[in-house]
Amino acid sequence: MSITAPPADVAIPVAGPSSAMVARSFLGRVLFYVLMAVVTVFFALPMLWLVLAPFDATPFPVFAGADGSRLDLDDSTAAPSGIRRSPACR
Image: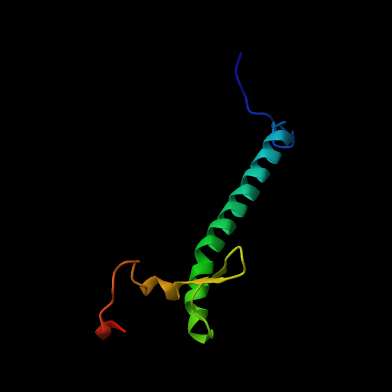
């Protein structure tokens, strides 16, 4: 008994990937690209703010309080209560 190769004109059936494997692979690639898009936006928005801040009238982040008052970083230089600032610092 000898093993010989089949003739060239005979198709040999080959099992391909199942439809579940193809769907899982596709879903994995889609989720990867969605995750990369979220990470890119997460890092790109602060960079966009740095680029556009010089052209803004109020370049500091401004937040509104619950009562509608304006909270911003301008108050960050205020001295804590009970400490007097010297006149030279005004």
